[in-house]
Image (tube, rainbow, N blue to C red; front, side, top):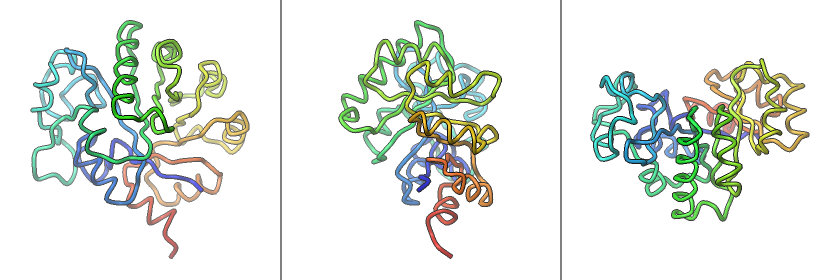
Length: 243
């Protein structure tokens, strides 16, 4: 059965990558989520997609230019749906403490070799502190070779995944090169042939971003392992509830 991941929580229903968004995802009975991470100036893992604050908070600066204590005071609901109250940028630790997801896809954006190592070590430490390493509850994903290399070197016990948006390099070969367990494919790359080949190689294939019911059903019929969607409630109604 195809399982459902909430994209940045429930991005289509609440401001992305905020506690409200992840709580909305859980309210639909969806216990898997995907989110994005950047480091604050003082080295804390912050849940935000862009390296800059402009799109979600309106502030003209970069995440890395602020300490975590500042970032958690910034309202990140700009341009997001369905929020009447402020939605601060959360620390990853806050979500681990307050949201009972059975699986987390943690996407780390491109970073330098030094920064990749810092982020990977921080994720490993936090996952251990919240006892998320005994079970398969965390997969760290990235399109960055630096990040995937850092995962192999500094946190080989954590599952890792390749995020593939373009087909100019064979995603399956890259995923296998870095010992990935998961392949997060842009849905346009998910042909039945590529899907079957990846699954035969032992990869969990997670497809993003899937928001239309007809596409959800088509990809589920293909046999994808999971879909990542902005509308987890719609996905539940489409894939899990019979008419």
